[in-house]
Image 1: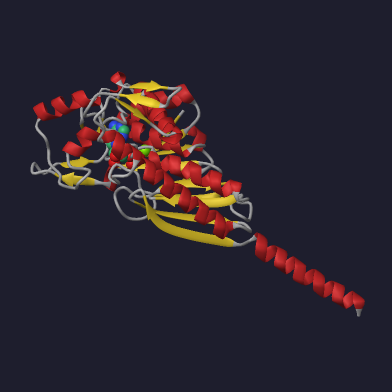
Image 2: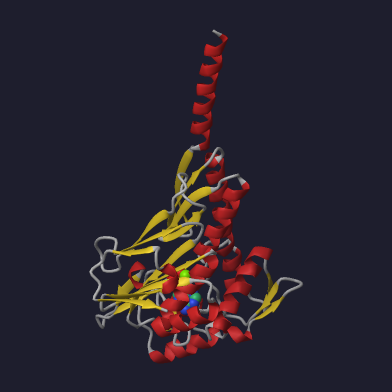
Length: 337
Ligand code: AMP
Ligand code: MG
């Protein structure tokens, strides 16, 4: 009889252990103008996801360009030359300015007066004339911005305005992963409006299978088997308007010209360890095009990329071999070595 009870106890314990350790929770919410989903597995997944959502909302309250109480809104509407930033906003400003220098201004967090003029902030789209663009471009000179490390102050002239739209979601993803880890989570997948970030592997120990969006519409053209990394995509198809001239103008700008990017790239996907880096690179490689992306890839050696072009061709870097599956009927597939 005693043996019987021991066996029953063991079976119940094993059942409880399995059901606790394999608990999953999926939380979806809208933040930073993006529909976000966090799916995590582990004992504490419900609380972990809630804490992660709270973390994202805190970031949004710092860097939103539209919330009047945000730090970036107040910076963008300041009347003084000097403005004190919180540790977190200072870190993002430093990161973004560094990106501007590294890309010779193709990427530029101070581009907001330009994107605003084109109507991307209000959806009242317009194509400004050349003189107006050149006039506003003068407000985006990132080399005139000074950061005071000790006091966390930024000095810049009146009229300069900032937007972390190109790195914010990647940064938020990194912070979500940190919060999940602090809550004991070892396996999670985040979808932040098409930015995918992965913590660990799937609970069965296998790699995650990530499908990339088809920029031309239709089925998934490319899938990746990856874990513990960020898969971040920039695409012109995400937001654009059609001008009176019949041309399509996308939301990704070339900081050097003050105009929406017009090249043959339709999407740029970065695979790397950190979301903020992937987000910076997805926007920057989109602007620079294939040659610029290859140059960056050869120089840095710490990311891989996939680029799709308007002639239905695709290229990807050799680090993705063995991880990438191509289903789309591309006109050409090139592996960059
Ligand atoms: P992403 O989707 O990550 O490529 O980011 C695009 C967003 O970044 C846009 O909606 C703008 O808010 C902002 N942006 C556009 N062009 C640039 C640029 N050249 N440098 C920095 N941010 C930009
Ligand atoms: Mg980006």
